Length: 473
Image (cartoon, rainbow, N blue to C red; front, top):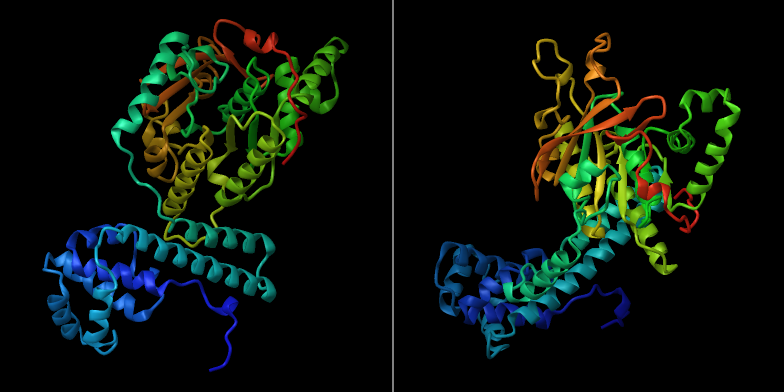
């Protein structure tokens, strides 16, 4: 027999596969425990796949599972010769004396299957790269998708006993009672909104929805600025799929220097505003604000960049990311083929939710709304959850949904309407109440502020700015 290079053999554990099947044939309880971990394609040996499939079939029918009844089932399926006959089945049963360790054997089999899956994915990636039949960006997306599919097969502890949760939960409650903090998450800088939401919570997906020109990008930038320039400055990663990095910085400087955005663009600046511009520039120079303005991003690419930045911050001993903002959701690209745009948006929404949970931080996705709020005859133009554009999954996946409503947008010729008044409507909050808060919107400076005052929150004005230099990812 010719020598075989062990490196050429795919990872496998035939002995562990036999131990799993033997355990399943001697104890029905072991069948259920193995089915919780393994699937048919996790087995390397084809005969073992068929044996596992037949045992699973008997279990689902509620039939008895032992060597005799299983032998009859194999004969009925005409697989007896394919699995090595009754003698091989007896060998499998004699492999184990007890089914107590079936989970251990099953995890060995699962690990080998995951390694084979990684090899297959990597082989496909290498093949596609050599062929050069697709754009590198598309190959990167497909490569990440292939690896993620393999990672989804990893077995994890799917439950935790209540007793293991009690102590940390009580500790959190005692800490809350001691500190009595109204804002327990990442603050937006808008006091009434923070009072209602207690801040943006870790692992939450937050949707901020509005019709065009209502100010959703401005609100996203305001929130980002309030966080990176606040007392407890935290890094923020801002993905802009619509505006360039230069446009974003113009907006940030105009907002915080109280300079008209049009004046910044044209250069017709009053001399007395220059000190305010340089002061605002110095603040953002030292702020941990990270911007990516690559158009046509995918959720996988967003996730990859976010993870890389998080790892870089931790490696340098800096604060971890506090928030991710995506402007805006409908511009995210999905490389996979979907039956409908609704399904595509559903997958994007779910991907952003997974990102929030994976990095354990809040993710804000700005979102377009349908045209229904602008329809003639609609008594109230305030947005509703049903106005979320293109997918009901947005409402389902989001932990917090905030709508921007400015009545002056719909009644532009009505002198009785306050042009600066804006409403932030909390239409959904999984862990809190729904309500509406009033804020001020300054169109010239593209700035949202607390309704009672026109300047930035006090915690921003009094902050010390010693965070790392802001750069583009």
